[in-house]
Image (cartoon, rainbow, N blue to C red):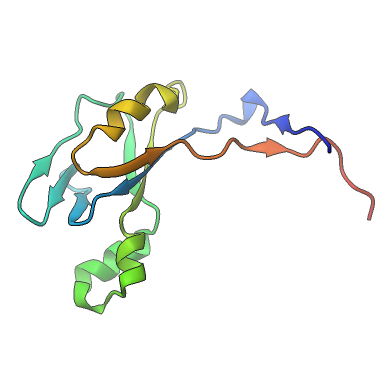
Length: 124
């Protein structure tokens, strides 16, 4: 087995916190708040470093949902629950993982797999 080679630090990749929302929750990016179907509001301001972003993993479904949620399949509604918290490059995601897990809107939070490069190329 060939050992993996870590991505060079000069690549400046940011590691997000991967989250899955609880059923009945959504993120309103214009207001930067999580809103439940029951009207509960959670504002993560102050819990993350400055210049953090919270984004849907399937943004095209967000537009479809705004057009008419009844048109989405159960699988599409499930996909809308998956998001990423993208932190500034100098903020380690592991530092914020427990805080994000405690948010009332979050069912699951985890770090993504570590990216690596192959140690050498294989002959064709």
